[in-house]
Amino acid sequence: MGCECVQQSVETAADRKTLRIALTLNGMMFVVGVTAGFWAESTGLIADGLDMLADASAYTLALLAIGRAMAFKRNVARWSGSLLLILSFGIIIDVARRGLWGSEPEGTLMMGFSLLSLVVNIIVLRMLSKYRNGEPHLRASWIFTRADVVANMGVFVSGLVVSLTGARYADLVVGLAIGLYVFKEAVEIIRHANETRQGASTP
Image: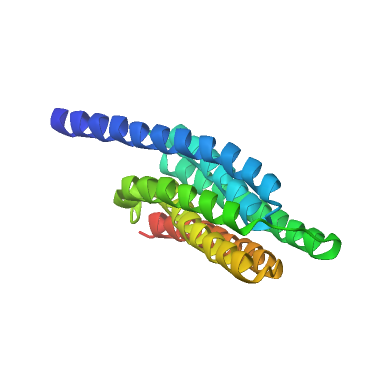
């Protein structure tokens, strides 16, 4: 029994350290990404930056859930998923706004900052990979970061298209795609949390 308690304590400390590092990196990249998005007039970069903020919020919730009861952890996963749902609607609204009133995205800036974000997210994703099949609150953190990597690659490709063709709609298409992908990830997080609850209640 004593060995189990020590092992659990070690794992809890390691989980907290991992999530704190992920939280710090995503908080920094949120500021960088949103600032770069307004500078480059890119809805894709802004969406990517807001996604970083959602990640930072999810990591904060996951930190609060460590050591708590499973019911609390499931609720944290649901809160994280709900946050992603709100974010996805915000991204889609911004895409519609820029589509109606216009924008002039800077392809070179989009590529540069999306690459920086991609490097950060790959580092965080590797750190969180051990949680991909773990408890719902930690798995939600891994799903968040996986979505970020996909978003980063999308922004880079759209930046390349904008640079080569000057077609601003590439940025809008990627922004919309990110919004829809974030929505899908939100649904997956909430569904997994509910399935975990059903599994726990099965005799």
